[in-house]
Image (tube, rainbow, N blue to C red):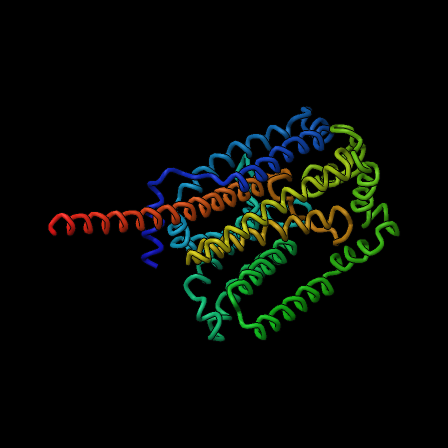
Length: 406
């Protein structure tokens, strides 16, 4: 542990190195999000606020704030993030408790997921996802052997996961619960959790998720509407049928930027959860594929960073990368799957793209952390090369001095 911290501390003073294969896809996704939020929110902005660019201006401000946050996040050593992991998790738990208290949590669309901060509504579940990833990466670094060999070591992170899941379900936020469970279990699997225990845990998690759906009538209704949305096209299946119409109108090349019809009060949440449907209508099949390819490039690069860090025994960095890659991949998959009708309707944002301050700011922290992983990985190589160069130079000087004496 001390070696890892000392490595990180030496990297802090080195010139910062950016990874283009992380920066470019992320910046393209953010730019796409700004463009599509501006387009998708024109009508509702005029209706609710009398200005066509209300949501665009807010999103642009969030992008500026996110850029500043990503910059400062990338300058903090990952050893410090690891040391703060329990504290970050505690803040997330306190936030999830506060959001449930009367007078603090705000009810929006039948759920209590936000804390009002005047000009900004904080969605605590977005930060809880990041907190559990940082905590799990720290735990897997410190207790990986215990996770493999001891039942208690295997169960300890599950207790924390169960607490967060219970608090999220009280909001209720089934989507965020599914994300943190899948990402956490994925990280444990990659860390080498025993296959028998892990298989039992996966089956148990699936049974619990199925029970949560079965014993909540509104969730059962969502599943039934998903199976046949056209049977209830003007009620429970309305949102999905409107999204499918958007994709149908877009065809291969789209109807053109700004020319969507579905965003004109037909498709609910067109600038947030169903922004991908507007992309499909205005930019067509090729626009949708391009967005998916940007996520594929980003996730593949992050997984490569994780594997590279693990080879260098930078274990926390590796599992942090794996966790963030799983989160990006799974949440993007859910949002896109909901939009195209292969998954039941669920309110999860599309990272870097959907409108929303909490989502974009958390995505910015994620970007900063990934840039930091790459920076420390590069300077780890440089420090090894410099050490070898110094050692080789010292040997040469000693050899020359011996020859001179002879």
